[in-house]
Length: 315
Image (cartoon, rainbow, N blue to C red; front, top):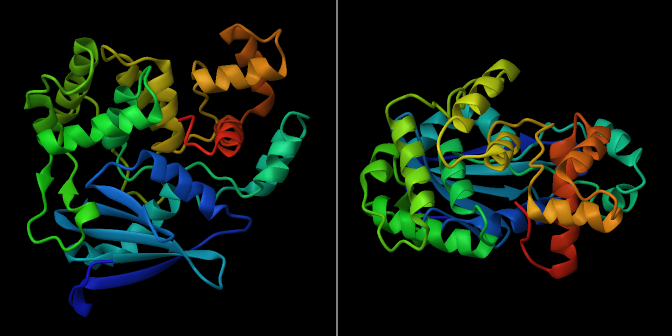
């Protein structure tokens, strides 16, 4: 963590009910971290954050002795430490009812070995829904690694360096919607239609048509009706399909039943288990057995591939 005045540091404990698989959550974040904005180092998740006009650095690690995470906020943003407890707890999925999830998914023989292998698997959230949507659009039909590289280029092209920031890995602000909508993205490494989709989305957020981060600072998070409205608004934009919307819903909007049905890795995983389940419709019917915890089903299926290949595949 960067060194700063004690008056600008705040530490908060974020309790959870075990089991909690911090190592796998860090692996997920590490494979998708945006260079300059966020990083995983020495068991810590780090990122530059801004909250109500105050900026700083967030560091989250697992407590050495307790069933909790420790969140350290440095810089002016530390003055908001108490109100950040709830959104950070959602971001790291600390309130998931693992008992109910295991009961539902474990009723399907497919998931018994997956639950045994990773009993504390959670759905990694996102600090910014806007940032996640941009990354998800970039990730359409490309690998996780390729998407991460291109998002890093977007930060360099449209983001802002944080003056005097002492931690190089988190020394950039992710582009604002207005900046991303206006910047020249020629030769960024994406097809023109995907560039248009990103900038069209950024413009819609900048002018207030699609407030994707609405409710982030509420105590309870987004209501189901709000998530329905956000889904509709996002899906109506050019270049954004159901996969993008469902992926954002599971990670940023915390919809435990979101299901990115057309995700290639998920489809391959399901077909490998039952070759008769080839069509998206047949797979969706099977996935209904996992409701209302389909987002966790997706995580377990992705995690199985990542464990096998030692890579950040899926999502």
